[in-house]
Structure formats: structure tokens, C-alpha cells
Length: 609
Image (cartoon, rainbow, N blue to C red):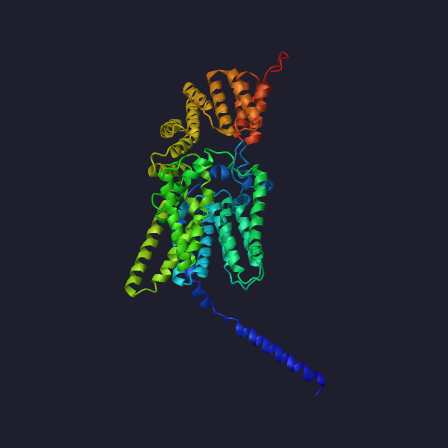
């Protein structure tokens, strides 16, 4: 036997033994039947989400869908990607002051439009599929945290059919809630993967998903506390000082947040909350009652609507102290349960409360009747569903009688929620039923009456529009937006003296932001043109032009004014400018008509006009 052959055989046997040991350490391969059996629960809960939201496919575009999707060229062509990345969300509307920078959301809308055009059913399908994907992530989250297949299935099924999700899923303009929730839950799941896999890379990947979520919706920043805590726990076995561990756990998330804030500040020239309807004092003293309102809607999702009227407080009354006491006691209870019973209580509490904190800033930004919305509870509902799933997992171990009662209650809850969710979607068919639902839920809310007035005015039903404006004005006499809507309605019916009186009163009102003051002056200028006060109208239009030369409808007003003055050439130029800025087809038509008039006119006597 040659020496070489004596060497080769032991190497071959060593390879075989190594391969055998590797195979021995690996889980046995499963056939397709076993894999299908394991996939039954996620398939059922995802299918449940798909079936329950099938009604959404028959809904149309409502409210923000029209300017944000239908009339937004930037989500209908890839040539606008640079604008999407470098400008605020509503930059396609000249003069519109937005508080949002959400380029990933705009890119998502661009993808949906590329695939389905402006077919409402396709847009609704895209939102439903996002919800199905999010339901699957909730299932995976339950599988990692609950330790019970029953509890995991209950948590995911409850999330799939919870009525509080209807606004986020059925209103396509709110799909950013699901988009950022998907990315955030993905970031959490990566941190909950086995800690012996990937070293520090899971934390980096989790931070990248979290940072991407910020570009879909900025409120995801509140989850940084939970993510850093999970990253810290993941690094338990890391050698070195606590400061090194903290730097490794927090560094990637802080870097992502700072990067987003720098870009946001550059795009918005600030953080977006520098100006608003109210001061920070009202935000502080109104937040506890609105937070409690959110928790009540999350637990008992009844009488759901597109908007609600929430009381605003400017001093520490009982309406401040009682809710803050209730929230404090709830936080203490969940913290105690987290340490004494299971960490799922602390995790769920963070998931419920943290995403709601940024939503409280809307108290400063938005007027009454447009502050609290169901869609802000999409991600917080995951925390509640996990808690219910954990309790279900514990109760299935109870005696048979209690187990039977538990199963019966859960079945009734899921069926009830499914019916409520399916029925709630009908209120998203069109703007009229949507606004009417808001009115039915709270007849004292003036905001939906004003929105309903806008719908009727757009449809040419000026009498119905004015009627709703008057009701809105009676319910909210101090709301400048509603007063402005009423004045425009009166203008449409040529009731110029009343419109003039309302607008003059608005100009005397203090605390209005620059954009609102400009809108009032422009509306008043149009009224003065209707009254024949052309000199006063020209002064007002010049003030608007000084404030913002690209303000929507400014050049339309100037075109009408110059036409009334017989300055046809200037009028034609203003109508053409209005068309270039806003895409107003009527302005283009007026420009073409005046051009034809000038071409057909006899030679002038040398006058410029």
C-alpha cells in the first residue's frame, strides 16, 4: 500500500464524521404536509384580514385622496422623484404649508400608481395587502413573545379584525400608518431573533428599518426608546463597560434619528410645529384627556368616525389631573406586572403609549374637530392584541369550564369585531357619506359640516353648500377656516356684502398665521371685484403678491381684475401664469379666449392696452 493512500482514508472519514455531526445538530427536514400544518394559523389570520377588508375594494377616493393622489402629478410619474426626496409632502400645491416630510410614503404611492393607475379598487387593495402583511408580522411577534400557539393566533386574529384599523386600511391616504408600522415591527422582530446570530449586525439592520420608517411617517421616532431597550437586552453577554454596551445599543438608532431630523429641518425649514392653531400650554394641559380618549377607543371601538371633537384646556383643571392620574396608575400597574408576572406587559405598554405621544402635538397644529383620529391607533393596537393573546394563552391551561368560557368569549369578540369592521367600511364610499358619518357620531362638530359644504360646492350644489357652511359657522363661530368657507360660499351665490363683512372681521382677528391671512385677503379681493371696488381689490391683490407671488388663485384674481379694467394683455398673462403654477384648466381656457380676442381685435390707436 502506498503511503499516500494511508493518508487519504483518514481525511475522508474525518469529512464524513464532520458532515454527520453537522447533520445531527440540524433540525430534521420537514415534508410539505408538516410545513403546511405549521402555516395553518398564519394563513388563517392573514386570510381573515383579507376577507374582512374585502368591502374596502368598493370604496372610492375621499378627502385627502383627491389632492394627494388624483391631482398630484408627483405620484403619477417617476420624473418627480427628485422633488419627492427633497420637498415636503404637499409641495405640489403652491402656497400650501405642510408639516410633513414623508418621501418613502410618496414613493410608495408612486409605485402603486405605476402598477394600478388611478383605479380606486387597486389603491384599496394595496392598503389591504399592507394590512395583511402587518397581520403576519404580529403573528411572528406573538410567536417570539407569547410562547403559546393559541395566544399567538388570538393576538394576530384580533389585530386582523380590530375595528380601530378601518381608517388606516380603508382610507388610502392613511396607508402611511401601515407602512411605518410594518417597518417598525420588522425592526422589533430582528432584535427578538436569537441573540447568538449575527453579532451586532441585527442591531444595525433593525436601526436601518426603523430609520426607513421615519421617512414614511415621523411619529415612528417615539419607538426609539423601546428599540434601544431591546438592543440593550440583546447585548447582555457583551464584554466591556456599560457605556460601551449603551453606545452599541443606542448608537445606530440615534444616528438614524439625527439624520432624519437634519434632512427634515432642511426640507421644512424647521420641525413643522413652529406655528399652529394653539400654544404649547394648550398641548400640555389637553394631552392627558386626549390620551385617555385614545385608550378608550382602543379598548372599546364604538361610534367610530373620521374625526372627533375633543375639549381643549389651557389650565390644570380636573380634566387634566384625573386623566393623568388614570394613565399614571395604568402605567404603574403594567410596570409591576412586567416585573412580577411577564415582560410582555412592559413591552405592550410601551407599544401602546409611545406611538401616541407624537400624535398629541397635533393639538397645536390642527383646529378643533380635527385633532384625534383612529388611524393613530394602528400600531398601538399591536400592544393590546399581544396582551389579549397572552391572557388567552394562560387561560387555555385553566380547568375545562373556564377554558370553555374563555373560548366562547374570544369567539364572540372576534365575530363582533369582524362585523363592526366590515360595516364601518361603508362610510368610506365617498365624501358625502364620510362627512355624514362624522355628523351622526357628533352633531356638535362643525368641521364635517364645512367639509360637506365643500363637497356640495364642488358639485355645483351651491344652496346645499351654503346651508352646511352656515351650520358649521353656528357650531364653530371662532374657527377662521369655517368662516372663510362661509364667505366663499356667499361669494359663489353673489351675496357679496355679507361675505365682505365676514372677511373684514376675520382680518381683525389676532393670532392667525400668515397663510390664513393671505387666504382672507385674496378672498376679500375677489369679493371687492364682485362689488365693483376695483381699486381696493387691486390693493389687496398686491398685498397677497408681496406675501407670496405664487399663492394659488392669486393670478386668477389678477386676471379677472385686469379683464374688468380692460387690460386684456395683462389679464391673458395672469391667467397663463395661474395655469403654469396650479394646472387650473379654467385659467388656461380663459387665457386662450383672451388671446383670441386680442388676435381678432382691430388695430389699436397706439394705447398699450
